[in-house]
Length: 87
Image (cartoon, rainbow, N blue to C red; front, side):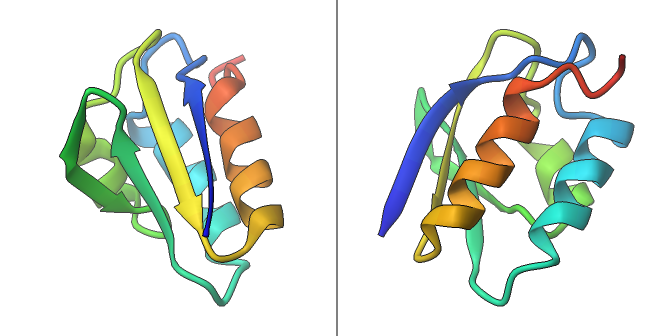
């Protein structure tokens, strides 16, 4: 199992547009990709669901851990979360 913790880069956090972009990218993989807030590992979201991503409430600067059996998927989703997807 691969995982990587990153800092949310989007100025509005993981809300509507950023969540949709992450979910679309996660949907390209067959493996499950899970997002968890680094400070609350009990709260997790399926990265392929923009609604679940938004429900995490991750704001700019929050730490999010990306976990999957697919290391390539972890790297791709982590890079998106670190980016300013509102730019």
